[in-house]
View: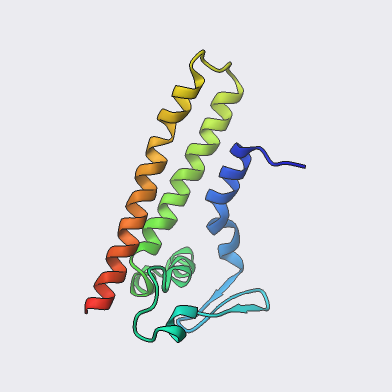
Length: 140
């Protein structure tokens, strides 16, 4: 059984919203049900350095509970990424509904390439933001 790409895109964009309610988040740990995850494997390998995503899961977990102060203190990009996932989910659902009711244009490859531009811009913004926060943490 294969999952259509559009369905997979919607599921991946909505992932934080689906898993968020089941996350148990504290400043020291993250757990999904009875399975506890390490806070950051890099922190034990390279103390004081961490990784670009250090605190991101905890930040998103706090943001889903509307605790934006703690979310920001864990990782400033968490709220941004959560908002981006909400917008991306809405766009993918809207696109799926819209495209299911009409036929593809003759040059549908060019249309799909054009539609991917916002995704590339958003991905680049997230990557730049993660690296910027990481560098700011290292330099401070």
